[in-house]
Length: 161
Picture 1 (cartoon, helix red, strand yellow):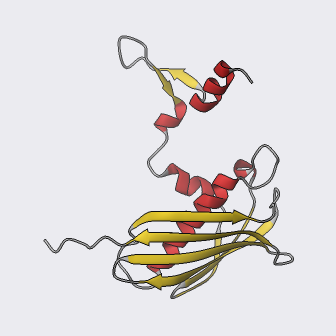
Picture 2: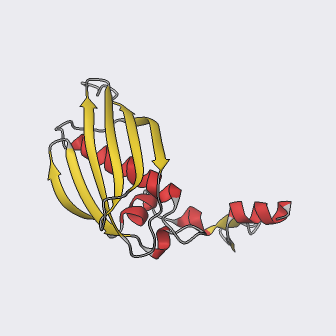
């Protein structure tokens, strides 16, 4: 791959924008609604169980979350760890989930198109300043682990004003 091809791959498809006299080029992605990625990745998720400090979800791997190898993209997996890890923190009764300070994911197996997966999240600790969640993605048919993640969040104190 030459340098220009790499640049075009990273910048994505461009469209003409007539808003300014200079006909500036703008990425189509710039026009997506705020927080689009959350809906994009979680589309099709079904919550099977929700209780304090625990969530179990399931979904079929959709085509829009596949990588070039035709299995669940690692970035989509990490996003699921982020979003479902944050959600499980809410189940403990706190009013906000803070900001991520660390997310790690160990990729152990692949999940393919239309394969049913289960995502289980547990809040391991929710303190005054820090919350930690463990998230595991498994094949629903045999329980084989696809990925294990851990999400650590800083719970900034809320202003009392």
